Length: 157
Image (cartoon, rainbow, N blue to C red; front, side):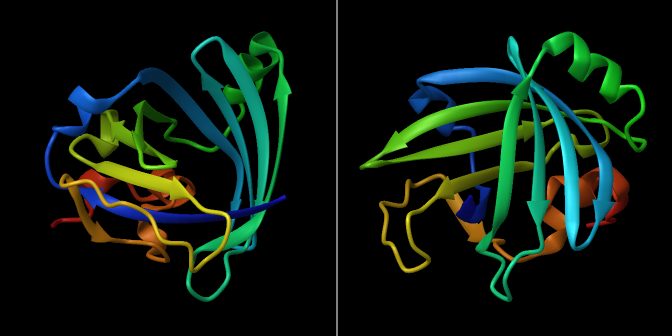
């Protein structure tokens, strides 16, 4: 139930040619407290409820619990989520023995592309693709729960 991951900005759309899977995702948050979030997600034809705990100091590790739920129930729960649903397409790319999940955001987060990689330990090494940019692990602005409250378009960068 521990999630260990690193997050990166993406330099180009080159990753799209390497993707073996592409899935539309819509998600919302029932709770975005900094110590715990409760997310409802519809990913393709499946739906999930996820609870995440607070991250460690580095932002790499936190508790995560997830269960699949019926899509109809997820659709109902999305209606009572906090404002600003997250809409994105997830591209999955194999890199060595790992898989990068690259999220291209839409709506209020248009223009943001983030790559994540899940690891088995915080010190695990992995192959970095050429399109991988600056690491943003631990920068809470890039957490989806915060992107729903303070969308990328409002950052003024």
